[in-house]
Every structure is written in C-alpha cells, then in structure tokens.
Length: 194
Image (cartoon, rainbow, N blue to C red; front, side, top):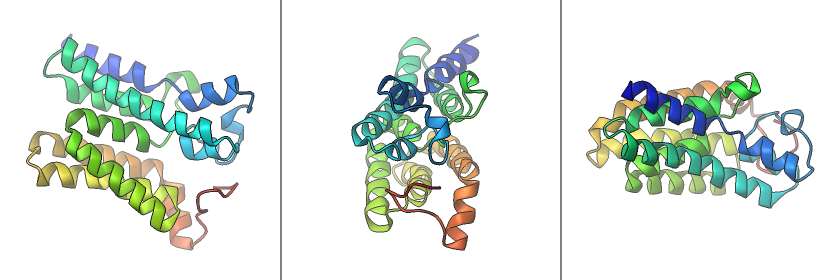
C-alpha cells in the first residue's frame, strides 16, 4: 500500500491547477481559453498579470517540492514515486480532463526536494537560458535535461533514471513548441500567441 499511497499523495498535490485557480480568483478569465491554453506560468503571463504568473510558478514548484518532502516524511523510501505522481498530476490532472501543464516549474520543485544542489542548478540553467533566448519552452527543456546530468555529476545516481524519464515527459509535453522552434516561429516571452 505504501507505493500506492505515495503515488496518490503526489498525484493529488501535483494536480492542483494553480494557474487556473489564480486567474479565476483574480478575474482574468479561464486560463485554458487564453494564449496557448496551457495552465502554467508562461501562459498566465499572457493575461498581463506578472504577479499572477510569478505566483503560479512558485506554487507549481512548491507542490512538487511538498509532494516529495511530505511523502519522504510519511512513507520513507517512497519519495521518488511521489515525485513521479506529482509530475504526472500536474501534466494530466483529472480535474481538467487530463489537460494540464508542461511540468517545468513542478519539476524544479521536485528536483529541489530530491537534492537541493541539483535544484539550484536547474533554476540557474532555466533563468540563464530564459535571459539569453527569451524563449520559455527552450529554457524549460534545457533546464529539465540539466536535472539528470547534474544528478549524475553530483553522485545522485538513484535519481538519474527518474529525472531522465521526467525530462523526456517534458519533451513530450513540448512537442508543438519544438515544431515551432524548428520552424523559427516559437514566440518569445511576452508574445500573445504560442
């Protein structure tokens, strides 16, 4: 039962759609009908509410972090399952007919909880790529793949397979972005479409 409990706790926390909740509370409309329709911070930014976007990013990261930390405390040894559950919950929340976010912020929270130095590297790579390219999807993809690389480099070999799998899911969720990146049509941060 312990593995199932870890997965369930992770999934339920991960599936909280903070972007949708915050934009509705703020009167900014249904986030799923704005911009790309994504429920993450980048699309919240398209509402013109920078504070809401920042709050969404922090809360999406926090739920990933909390899922791992809480399960590590309640069910020792099952934190990786909670991490997987939280990530899948964010990307495929039952409350939104399994149409969720792309997982970049939630993955950052997960990595911070699993091994904080890797989490700091993740955040630094994400911010650096975003500053240089101003392309949110590219920054997120590169940051996601920095996680298993940094885990391996820092001797966190137990996390490498999990983080590789989650990074591949980030790629899967960014399929349309990758098509636009290859065609040179991916919008930069601040654009209305994409």
